[in-house]
Image 1 (cartoon, rainbow, N blue to C red):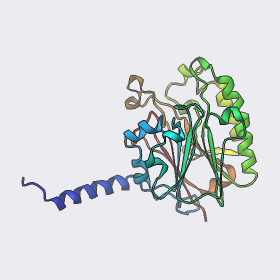
Image 2 (cartoon, rainbow, N blue to C red; image 1 turned 90 degrees about the vertical axis):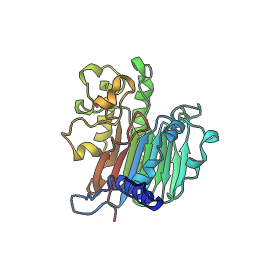
Image 3 (cartoon, rainbow, N blue to C red; image 1 turned 30 degrees about the vertical axis):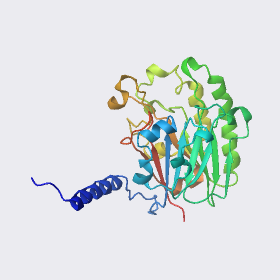
Image 4 (cartoon, rainbow, N blue to C red; image 1 turned 60 degrees about the vertical axis):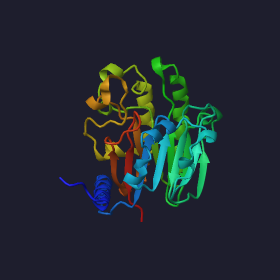
Length: 292
């Protein structure tokens, strides 16, 4: 077979890129038949600098999202890579933890928000870089990295302190305009949301206390958008430990969510778990909404 001419190779590369991008296209609509016009991507990157080395930024090209929310960036402002600080086409907002290499969240937005606030108004939790709130014309966008109860539940008390404070923060926002909240919530709510529920009832992420906290959030006027759309769909996970080849075996947990104010559920088009994307021990999740 003769070698390809240079322009033929370029054509192949363009075609491959187009196929990749088309894999992330969607014709999802609301129940009333309105097509989506807002796309949000949320991803726990388990260390932003490591994620960059694993081609994490490709999600911007593949998804072409309006808003991107990252959790567990583990990077101080002083060490923030230039390609992230100066993301082309996006306004960038960061809330790192005071402790370098720990926690932290980021938000990127094509449209400049009306206002951006950092934290929930609690110094202990806010020092850990756990929440960014961006206000838009028709909704609040909240990205969060919820405290992990820890191995042997050593930080369950911290988690139990966080839950009611964060819930009240969301309720206060919801009183002004609807809320879209996303992030790593560090809980699998129901047995359907993890591969091994029986073996994890006393482990972080599936204790009764954490699950009850999530139930209380939903009871306060919010909806788990994925389970609203797919109440009985099994094997749907967003996190897999690196040990034991768990991702290949799909032995995982659904820890990442889009939680919406009840009154904007009619605007919901789809919630997609992007298991084909690697770069972290979590995969990204994508929300499609319609707003007039």
